[in-house]
Image 1 (cartoon, helix red, strand yellow):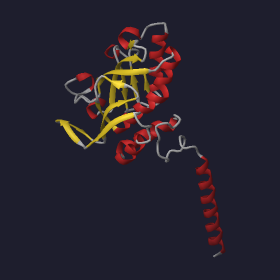
Image 2 (cartoon, helix red, strand yellow):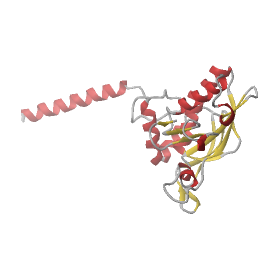
Image 3 (cartoon, helix red, strand yellow):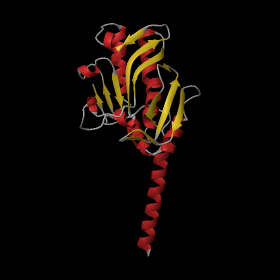
Length: 232
């Protein structure tokens, strides 16, 4: 009986110690605490984003932590816009702190990753290299019911589940336009900005592909949610 009592006391003490330790872990390092748009990015961030793929309510709650006007979006019901490509846990992104050339459908985690990227990596990079902010994003779209590289067979592209966005150009508040096709190899601020924009995306997206990856990506960045750190 005494041994059982000692065991109970030890278990209780361990529980209290763990609770006290857990309370001291910052939210951005704690794997089980809800994700917020302005959480400092850590290696845990990607893991939290992946978990939200199967948790619509938690993902929408995380999107709701964005400041007013930092994200304009509409949650969408699960649907199948093209045969063989059902979509679930998706939203339509209309805009954010930047304008888009067109609204786009994105998985909820992709929309969340984009807003975090925009606020914590893209805009700081623009301010560093140009002294101004990005005002407009030109993209090639997100959802496309197709296989990788448009092949007739093989594995489905991330675009088939709206888990990827292809970015082609950035327009700054002062009117300057930076495109991947024209400026990736520049040795000036435009090229440096594009490379920093690519590197910063790797902190959030599972697959980041651009001109350094292959010719198929010479004119755009592919920001996708699958994988963990394919950064080219």
